[in-house]
Amino acid sequence: MLKRRIIPCLDVKAGRVVKGVSFLDHRDAGDPVVLAAFYNDSGADELVFYDITASSDDRNIMVEVVERTAAQVFIPLTVGGGIRTVDDMYRMLRAGADKISINTAAVLNPQLINDGAKRYGSQCIVLSIDARRTSAPGATPTWEVFTHTGANARSTGLDAVAWAVRGAELGAGELVINSMDADGTYAGYDIELLSAITARVSIPVIASGGAGTLAHLYAGLMDGGADAVLAASIFHFGDHTIAAAKTYLRSRGVPMR
Amino acid sequence: MSLAVIDYGAGNLPNVVRALTHIGAPLTVTSDPTVVANATAIVLPGVGATRDTMEQLTQRGLTPVIRDAIRRGVPFLGICVGMQVLLTDSLEFGQHECLGVISGTVRRFPAEDLKVPQIGWNEVYATPTLSNHPLYDGIPDGSDFYFVHSYYCDVNDPAIVAGTTAYGASFPSILMRDTLVAAQFHPEKSGAFGLRFLRNFVTHIAQIECEPTHV
Image (cartoon, rainbow over all chains, first blue to last red; front, side):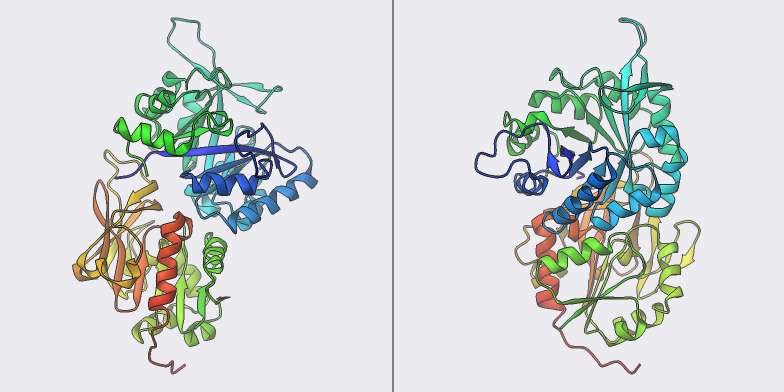
């Protein structure tokens, strides 16, 4: 049986992991390669590096980080952040990334999804969507797509469900659905958002934003219909281990590796 | 022994090379038909589509030397699309001929009730062909390997199916015939058991001697 996946996500800036990782007392918890190896050993099914660097010099550092990771960690690695062209994709794929995650660049130029899928295959192209709820409480829920993840997020006027469907049609192989409302709240994924999208697309959906407990992971997978959960803080701060999360999910009947 | 890892532009070539390097396998990355013809063992990586892969292999003059090497019993490992192109033909982007060293057709997963592509970790179960074979040393039956594919190998001879995996129906995830091995999953991305699978191939199969080339 195909397993559901747990995917830790590391934010990397100028070659260092940001957002503290507090549980690795005697190891260099700022080194993405060390963390990648740690998560691999503890049962992560895949890894995501998200490059939050602005400058192109620092982008070259990210290429080295990916190369060093791919030489030591033999599970799928997705790289996102600042990828704007198929040539940017190529550099990361040559360095050892298995998949490329695109977000803002895909909204600005949807053809990038198609170009990337044609050149490298759909399995390489992950469309990441930042969505914020726009409907009034009690009304039929709707969500809008935002770009430029973070404090300077910009509205696009795009409906998140429609954009997810379009992304799949353009050739994305997977979707990451990040709820901006839930992100950082530790109150759980936006299950309505996940359900609305998993009901409409036939490609794998990865839930992101809001996980604070193991029960939230379960809800994202089983109630939201996600194929995988992306999580950062819940694991980085040592509140839960991936092994414990898998034991819990398995005990509730979720197929886990 | 040195593995010839065939370079025809496959996206996963660098990661296959990294994994083989990690386990200490001596290797040469090549697209030169003469080098492939003289190789004592061959690895054919692959990701993407069979049609494009066949075109890339044909352009480089590699299809006759791969067929001849397999006929001579040169130890061979095909990965993902590198497995699929061994079959008679494929229906991906229109029916087309493949290498034809294994009788069968590459077919798309039926889309009803299944997400296609299959992406993720899935269990591999050994058939009697594999269960006591050194290729499976140290790998518990039912271990998970990492799959990414929309098409699967529908083979005509059940005796060459060495491992099976269920996605909707059961499909062959490992094929084996003497020194010819092929995996639908990506051993280079399948963690410890994936590396073990590669090491077993290198240690137990790639060393087997074959007929010399006449090229």
